[in-house]
Image: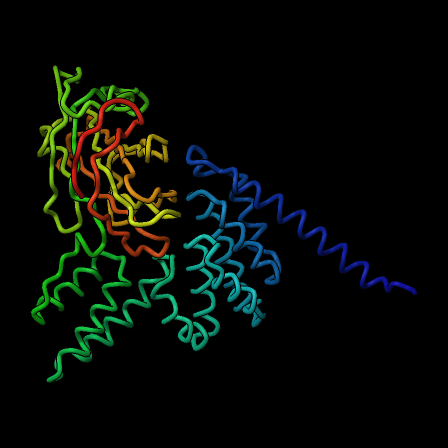
Length: 387
């Protein structure tokens, strides 16, 4: 059988495109913060933005492993590719874009970009999918879906029978993850005579033991292993930055469970503090620790280091950081390290965090009554605290 020359040419062209695309994508994925104006990255964006529209799904997939800076470059290439294609009355591979959007394994912001592309070209299709995102793991996709739920509840609130509105607002609250939406829904429920406990609803952990301050002069505290990381002595004293320190119990009354180390340990700078508690899980299995913090931080679960970020005052929000973990049924010990830097501007004085435990969709896993605590480091004596 004779293979036609144009088929061979097409295969060779596709192979060339793939190799060229992979090289440019790899160039972008290697871009770090120290190379924000990388000339090679700019060149790669230009090359990728000129690819045929059939390559759009591969560019979306490249967003999955990308760091924040590389993702910005890739989104720029994708935006230009889409604009150029539509301006030329070309066709985008919408079926593949849709499939990418619906695959929850893909990176949330990449899925949001796929949704925006679909909404631009096929608004009716995008609108039909929107309600299904109310319980999506992607916070970026949930927002618009929750807005629909809020609008439906608003339309019912002035009717004689308040029960449909209450039911609708409660459904919206179950799905909401953005603080502005949460506060709007809570306000409406309270106006209808319903008591709303946001701290419990979202599972923010309020009861902690705190100790500090330890040193963080010249930002050395983040990597320094202070005594609370070695041994838990709930009734003992240890040497801190300016003398002996001991664990103190605190209970957050803030709606979103913020734990204020300034109030407990003093309004200080260039310091490190620790918080520990026990989460008594009703289930065993996969979960997420969700943290909001504008200071440097590290987290351990059951003595195992989970993750940390040595950054300061970039802002904090609900579910800012999502950390996949595996819970034991029963007592799970948490240890949080929170570092404060030397900056004395008013907006840098906060030394605080908020933490909750939930499933992958953000639904709270509520702690049961729990037994005496184990050590957060796996060493030393046990104590007790409550969530």
